[in-house]
Image (cartoon, one colour):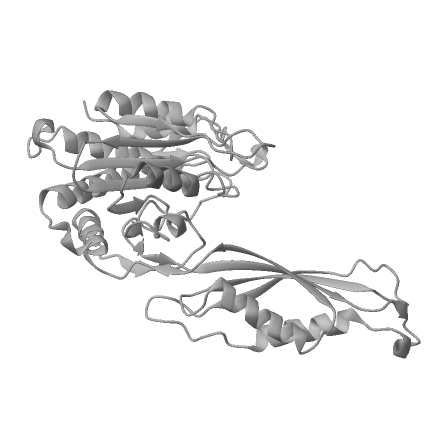
Amino acid sequence: MPIDPIALSQELIRCPSITPEDAGALAVLEQVLAPMGFTCYRLPFGGKSMAPVENLYAVYGEEGQNLCFAGHTDVVPPGERKAWGVDPFEAIIKNGVLIGRGAVDMKPAIAAWVAAVSRFLESSERPRETFRGRISLLITGDEEGEARYGTRKVLEWLKARGEKLNACIVGEPTNPKKLGEMIKIGRRGSVSFVLTVHGTQGHVAYPDLADNPVTRIIQILSRLKAHQLDKGTEFFPPSNLEITSMNVQNPASNVIPADAEARFNIRFNDQHTGGSLLEWVHAQCKTVAKDYTLEHHLSGEAFLTPPGYLSQLVSRSVESITGYKPELSTTGGTSDARFIKDVCPVVEFGLINETAHKVNEHIGVDAIQSLADIYERILRGYFLSVSHNTL
């Protein structure tokens, strides 16, 4: 029997899988996928000082093109539970709206894909006995956290086994206000910096005997903010630097401090790399300060899946169900697509992200049903009516 995406969404939300805890969410999926004929691999990865992160790779079929769906069952903490109108893990439906942590980001998208696969496999157009293809799910419990032991590790495991992904749909919530508005065909890169300028402590009345690091760090930050990194591209907005904090830790008004710290982040398009931006920041610092420390963390490089067969297939499927021709976009934060793009073409399409990570996160059940319909159209288009030579 076809899977009910609403009921499965509720089951998943009722697992309080606050990152990186699994809380039984992957077992719920296994119990549904195994009877459908999927081979399920539980893949725990982790460091020596932490409990392993649970991941799942499930695959149906023995040969042919492998269309993968990627997602995550971990969620962010619900915050102050009293602010919720309901228990965030009860998965209550009120007036046609499913409420709960993960209702948007992104348990119902996983449920919608599973439901779509169940319909597709039971379709008379493609009897199971004649199916030539592979349908897979890569589900991690480490997307909302550090993303060190999730998708990246599963991809390494697949490579070691000689398992190939030919195309991937990531089920992140991509639509700003209504289902069908937007498909993500790329993401900006993200690199964060911690800059510490070192000076010489002294009395404010004798500045010639000191070296004020606050003055120098303000000059550096001004140079960084004043510079236009680029003007954007056809698919990317201009790269953007935002200062997120400054810290001097000096309670005295008559003391020049020894150090000053600032933190900032750059969201960048594919005209830059994390390495090129690191060099640029160093160059700006050296023009002002002789003694400084610069730390950086690259979350992911910018990438773009050029418009082509995969984005066209998803666009047609979306438009056939919603009536909207979706925008091809690269806006928003990072996602696990930043790892998947290294192994196959990848696009993202999911629910409406308006309440993601918020109190009373919610989605209409009709949107979940429509998403399952869209995913089914994608499966039919991919396996029944296309040549994959363009992928």
